[in-house]
Image (cartoon, rainbow, N blue to C red; front, side, top):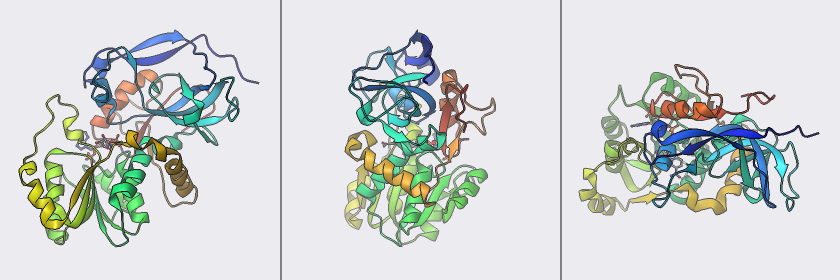
Length: 351
Ligand SMILES: NC(=O)c1ccc[n+]([C@@H]2O[C@H](COP(=O)([O-])OP(=O)(O)OC[C@H]3O[C@@H](n4cnc5c(N)ncnc54)[C@H](OP(=O)(O)O)[C@@H]3O)[C@@H](O)[C@H]2O)c1
């Protein structure tokens, strides 16, 4: 029998538009939600942290957004309330979802966008935003062919880990950038052929010396000088996918890249291309991509690594208040794999 719901719960809200996540957010205790006819009420177990959480608080996703508003892109949890028109879900069912407002102990999710999962485990979170981003962008714009060379930046991160493994699964030679020896070891363990620790090795020089023919596909999420190096390293008919530009997110000034002046000539001379990719423009592919990633994981072809704060000085992320620390952790560059925060830890679901 379903246990009684508390009368109130805790959630995070954005109260100020700024990329400073701590300053932007605060917490509220609010009355328990009631699902509308087509909704599920989900008790969150694990929510995912994303680099763009600070773009969201800065209002960069929706320039018309006015605080207060909810925040948090994704989570997994258990169904604790079912709308009157919903017949495919029942109490206790594990679900994974992407909807705004995940940074809360309870969340309403339209049943139409909830994906049933066998149990509300942390390992499903990375397949939502991070896995789908790598999977769909590489298919749409990477057009990987066996034997090609693929460069992944932030390769040991939430989405980078998938780009590395998917490119390996496609038969490619994979280079991955990262900033610590521990991440180099992690990248080797997931099949990366040439991890580059850019704090001890020069990325531009290595690409020039070891890959004189150029790179076929770049999965690029850093921006700034890394973007410039990647553009310069593109080979004949090379494809660079702009996944993000994290080096500019903490600033309100962005960055200027000098490579823009020479971009037309660089692309034309190699018949190369640059594409931008934003996951939210590919909602029609969510279901199929999630299914493929879970299936690859079940058959041992892919592994989703989660990080609940293993290298965080103040410990693991438990409770909605720890989302602030978890976002700080992402920007500390210490995380490996997908950062998750555990919510409602009183129950049996464990990492
Ligand atoms: N386009 C989309 O739809 C989409 C969807 C999801 C994510 N993304 C993008 O993918 C990138 C990674 O996001 P994620 O959430 O998966 O984060 P993440 O990779 O788990 O963490 C960010 C990593 O970026 C690297 N980094 C390099 N320069 C940095 C800087 N100046 N500040 C902070 N980190 C820096 C760090 O790894 P090293 O220290 O090892 O370099 C860090 O661990 C971001 O650019 C994000 O916006 C885009």
